[in-house]
Length: 327
Image 1 (cartoon, rainbow, N blue to C red):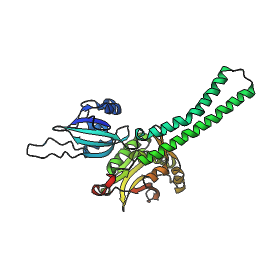
Image 2: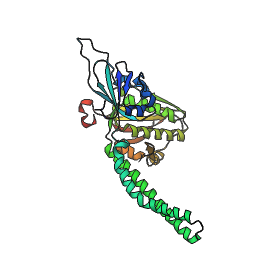
Image 3: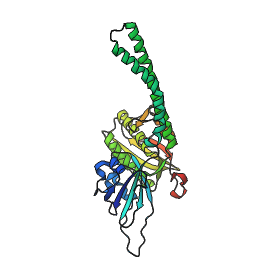
Image 4: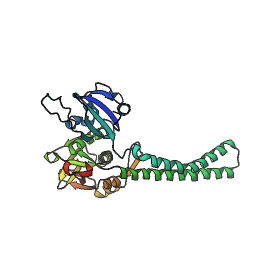
């Protein structure tokens, strides 16, 4: 277990957890306890589809012990790269890793620079405040000078914090390669997330054109972008239901959010693209346009006669054998 990065779970071939390392216990809490069905840890129960918990082979049979890996979303948690390793007769090891663009991998440089930048203005604010506290009877003109110092240095701190957040977002984009995520897995995970965030019904529509379709995504960023869009659609259209659909559009993939109700103009959506979307406890802040650019994606607003939809067009992942570095 110590040789693997990330959180590690040992499961039997029926999918029950028999052991969890410290990081897995920290990530999953009581859900990492022995006897838990590992398939209940992930949104929409998709684990059974991509982690094949094979029965032990008969003496003359071969069992497939190939390493299998896929993106999956932890229930009430982030997207993870989950890898299944064979671990001898009767057991498998599941390795859970945050996307490369997680805070732990990119925050140290930004944090170090932020600490250095804020030392001086913070010291000035503290000195001014302490002086005013020690001499409450100082004349108004002197007090005003100290107040001005506090206001100026507070503004400097605010600007430096904004710069650090922007630097973090830039590192996030640089350090976060897009991962292969099955379209069906992603659609169902998004539906579950939206059901928690919206006050209206959310339905997933899947057709034959979705079979075998794989997306190239920063799954966490695109999840937050779709939550943002769906919340704006709900508020602007007063619709009663949203319909999610993932499909092929020629050589591209499309993620559709459709509704019946009030119409939304292209200019309004353009305004949304300049809005900031935040996640990771607001540590990562990117505009919707930044997230789309990160995916080489674009938004199209369409009216199909029965209702409207906002379509996010993005590249589809090539077949696994042609994926190269995207695999």
